[in-house]
Image (cartoon, rainbow, N blue to C red; front, side):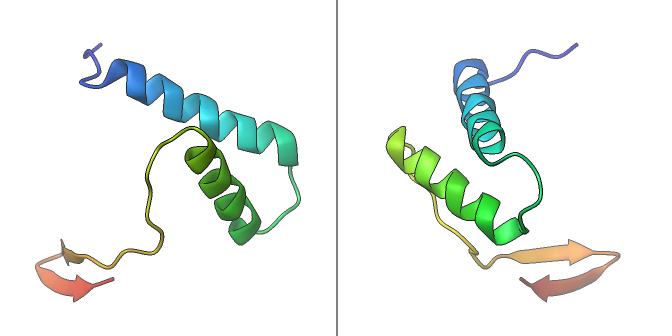
Length: 65
């Protein structure tokens, strides 16, 4: 198995995701989980941005998302 480059950060973010999931459980739409995750990240002093646009190449076609 490959070693993670940012192992400590990776485990912290996974833990934050699990916290949001455990608090809400299942049954909500994606937007609710996104809001909860944003709150958890901010509470843990991790900067984030939502719905950022970026260019991608897929099957030799380009798009901006």
